[in-house]
Image (cartoon, rainbow, N blue to C red; front, side, top):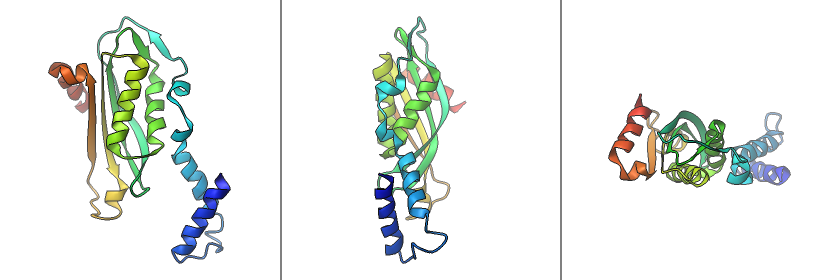
Length: 184
């Protein structure tokens, strides 16, 4: 598959007016193909394989919050990166998820061509699915190179998206506690 993708990159480089055979570009198609495969590796993963049984019985029933999970994704509209951080909280209902699995869930969905709004929803739905929590909240703050490098070229712009499920949607005090903790 890498060779097929590399051929397309070679065609793009040539169509842009460059010499794909010049010294600095001769290996670029293959490097770009490998980079794109890495940046979209989430398509090769499944939630079940990723979690790998790391859901544990627990009496915990208070909010669990994991903050500042870095993320790197690709804007599906321009194939340019967006970079940011994700905050995830959940209200356990007899089960807790292994800590590292939150970052792995973020990475799995972020490593796909995405829009931030859908990424936020996918992460929230996945955490809810594997934990059976009473509620899940996800906030993503990101900077989009498609807005910074092209188009309107606004260097200091960022986007915040959120999804609130269960208790975080229906209980204003739970939602407020989460939002207060995220901003501390």
